[in-house]
Amino acid sequence: MQIQFLGAAGTVTGSKSVVRYDGHAILVDCGLFQGVKHYRERNWADLPIPVDEIEAVILTHAHLDHSGYVPVLARQGYRGPVYCTPGTRELCAVLWPDAAHLQEEDAAYANRKGFSRHQPAQALFTLADAQQALGLLREVDFDQLLPLPGGLQGHFSPAGHIIGAACLSLLWRDQSIVFSGDVGRPLDPIMRPPRPLTAADVLVLESTYGDRLHTHEDVADRLSTLIRRTAARGGKLIIPAFAVGRAQTILYLLCQLRDARRIPALPIYLNSPMAVKATEIFYHHADEHRLQASDVEKLRHTVNYVESTQDSIALCGRPGPMIIVSASGMATGGRVLHHLRQALPDPHSAVLFIGFQAPGTRGDLLVRGATTIKLLGMDIPVRCHIENMASLSAHADQQEMLTWLASLARPPRLTLINHGEPTAADALRACLKRQLGYEARVAEHLQTIDLQAYLGGD
Ligand SMILES: [Zn+2]
Image (cartoon, rainbow, N blue to C red):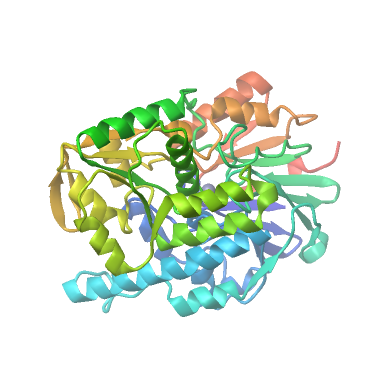
């Protein structure tokens, strides 16, 4: 058995690994590269495996950096099954058509402005490709055995990262190859903790925060101080957030603060049609999160949902104080750009980042103190207050990862570290070796690793 990393090696996006065994080939995760152009261009490169050789695709969760390449595969003619949990399927049905829409808009914009490598500019995938891809999804419940070609079996266990997120075990002749996917946190405000691992002969482990510890700060305290100060200045608080996951977490915290009268009764807007739909999906998966139905109901009543483009434009024209939660989380695109254009030059306003900011993205530049930023074709001066609360991340930090792994009865024979910037991945590798005695390696882009020596039995 061999594994080849087609993405998320040396970076945090483009998760895609091909597993080859006995003449069979399956893909684990099928994500888009996101962030800076250098990586996004990889979405246009041919895969090193012909599409008709892929017999099955398995998704750990719905975030586009793990699932968003499935419509591209469908565009290239893939018609095999794409296995995922029910929650992942529901979220993909929200995320993929929206991503297709953005791709089509970007291509049309490039054609109007006359800049593109392709003449005419093309969308990476279209709405029709997204619909085709949605038709390939096959639901597999947590803990239900999934038969795969050649006698391989799959198994999903809850990863606590977002609704539907799973760790995938591939069971092969009494051995297990475990893909962690994105690992959630033991004490997330809304998600239940990841289930402890019980066995892994080979482990493919994410390392987004492999070199960091989240601060154990009083999130409610810091958030309420920021909101009260911004409101007193009459400014707007803009919170860029991933539509799926972090948007719901921050809204829940805002509702709690408002109920406890720790913040003034400002209007709270959720300006992202995707995030609105993703919030509704919480109703269907009560066993995966900590919210009561009444909490989800409260979100509905406390938050003003903005769906149409006209309402989004009207919101930009409205004076503060107010709180606006909008996607995308790293300010790489989406409606949040229009709110940032207004808020960044305004010393009364504030911007709060709450998730991982990939190097080179606008979110990263702002968090690191940029004084001007390129946005919607303009150079925008940054005069507003910028804050970053990584403690609200949906990824386990270094220590939380070690604690999660501590339940393994014996160390994996090999741990392959992916889904992290090089320094984060290497720090986690060194830490696993030092503290747990693991044989761990950092995965490299397009590298193939033969697992046979590690799967030979005891
Ligand atoms: Zn994720």
